[in-house]
Length: 157
Image 1 (spheres, helix red, strand yellow):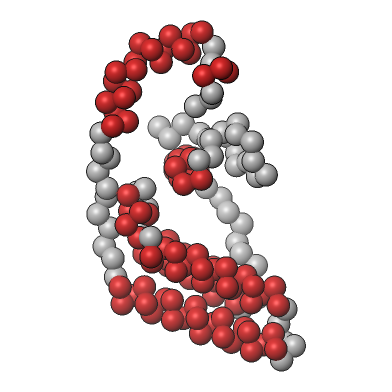
Image 2 (spheres, rainbow, N blue to C red):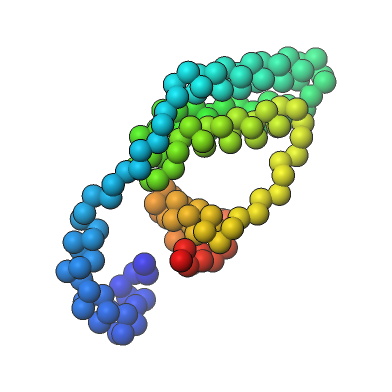
């Protein structure tokens, strides 16, 4: 949504005409999808990441791995821990935190092994979902000023 000062007269009229319905829609709680949470699996994945980080840190000290690899793994571990601690918030956004954790663990273990991540290719529906997530989580929207701007959000239909 643009600032009101940047809306055309036609856009303002459309908003006024639909304002009561929009306010009702925005005020209605959205039903959170139920995702199965496996605490034991989450703890196992975090333990794997911590062990991998310890191995990489030892390799850095021994001069066998670059320090940037340990830095990357620390970041992946922080991301993974966030998925565990914020699982209810992720579910409210429509994301399965355990699946996010699994994906983060896969990428982290690849990074620990020194592998490059595979190229990312999104289906139109996935790209639309990513855009919605960016909008809800970071307050980003297409056309907003940012250091990095994702591609134009496609229509999810």
